[in-house]
Image (cartoon, helix red, strand yellow):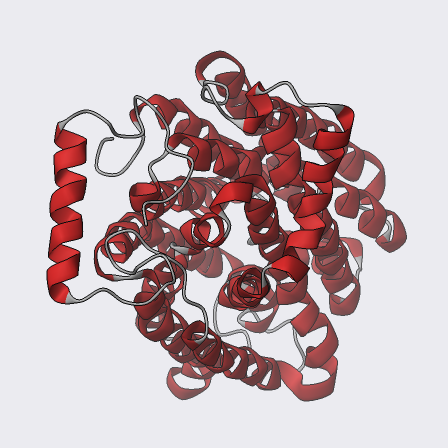
Length: 450
């Protein structure tokens, strides 16, 4: 591994970054574009994002077991092809009518989870459990490079030159490039993975259904789903809300900033996340997953959310203060990097099903983040939505107390914290194992150390 990144998956991380750049082109301006250029109401634009998120949730839920059963690389390629076809359908027939936009944009939600979350399965199959949070830190760093950083910086330059629609038509080139890198340079599942085994139809069906039944069989995974949903609500809600709130489109807001200023702010927020994703992944592996999510994640996110809502009222068009809120947002939202390691740790013998539960939660947050705005903005106003988000973040701190995932070197098999001496012994054993060449790069370990 290189600083926590599995060497053989380097091109997978590159493919993910380029793919998500194309997927993220619309993120910072589509809601405002639909309202100002095509006459949608803010609620109709919100409904497009909400339905899209619901489809993402369903697609993401099934991706884990599908990837583990049929092979993650196959699912990644299918996701890339579907994305390009469905994006073209949205831009050619859907974008000018609210009903067609909801239908076609919603359908496109099938595609990116197949690419993104299949790669999560490939990472989990190829990485030693004790280093999985570090590997997932790189995953979210690549995600941030693409979806937030390139996906915002490039439109900030192309929209003034060629307009929003032409910018949206550029996206398939990036998605196609990521898909081609996956085709030629990303390895398939390692030897011993479930997708490489010969299974009967009944066994494959049982594995597919386990993505649903595991929520009832493992209450800890159900609780982890709650945390995973809560932690990214604003990450997917703010790109819908803030272009309308900060530029004065909502009746209860003012034109504090321009669209270009908002896009650059979001791009900087995402650029910071590249570093903090990697940093939190390594810190979580060393000092404990749950502790950092509780205090630096949820408490920090509550403060950052209130900053986004109130700083414009308190300081007016002061970009410096918005960047202060943005930096806090970046540091806090990336403290949840260990979520990708927690799910497999809670069910190591059914890794694909556990990752499907993780993906379900990731998809649900894509749905519920915008849904909070669609439902509550007309009822409570913009600051009311801000308070709904902040209260949900604080409720998340309570949930983290009752989840005890086994973490190699930090807890025992039952999730109870190790003493300082026990942690030192576990680290020494892990270092000796790495020095002897028995790490996951040569022979993937599919169950965590106890």
